[in-house]
Image 1 (cartoon, rainbow over the protein chains, first blue to last red):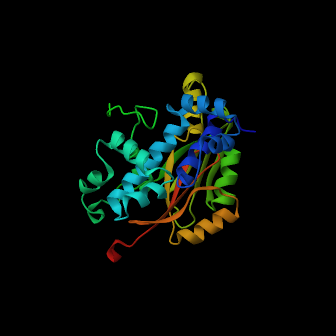
Image 2 (image 1 turned 135 degrees about the vertical axis):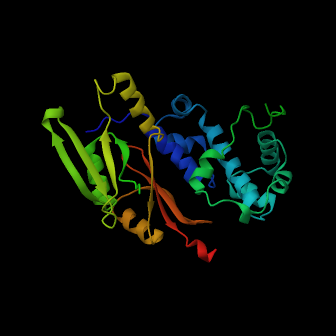
Image 3 (image 1 turned 45 degrees about the vertical axis):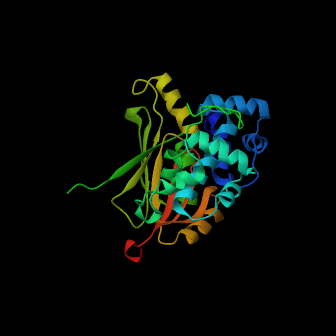
Length: 144
Length: 142
């Protein structure tokens, strides 16, 4: 029997966030995927990947929203809901804090999708995910 | 002319990896050689049937003196977090390959999706390595 370090179970939770971010997925679901209690899971996830699971999930959703803003003409509200976020107001707030401008301005700042090089989406997903430096969703702090 | 001969993945357990890559992914064994004079080191490679000059080396994490225990522990920890290896596999029919592999028990972390460059999907091996499975679009059709 191969020795499997505990982080292998945490990777299942991270993969779940990447695969099903669009669904009403929460930290409870991620903890269940890892087979850990919620409190223990959050600590262990943060120790393994450097950020708490709810931040990982939020930045994954924001990264997907930013990708849809760049590559589709879907309405901002539709994009918000299609990446699994429930409030347009908090989406706009956290997007603006993360990317330094509101969703519509972000879209206007990028060229049309056809101009983009054919880089695999898994690479774009990994390297395009923003780093969150603040916690609470409704904090009014400017981007750091 | 230079070509690529082997690419290497770290694996937790070579028997487990061999079963996964042959029975589930459908690759064939290229070399499976154990060297008693090298402390039982096992050189294990697998590759696709249609590509005889290219193989994946399934390498166990070594111990001392090649790699100190602390470094080996760090490599294992990185593997468990999915940071230690990626291989991009190509298929001429992503959905058919997805169905075939799923039927053999491979758990995909990304089901096939349309991308600008083709139909793309992804799964992990038992060690946490990230395998892509992509049907690359003929760029002439873009």
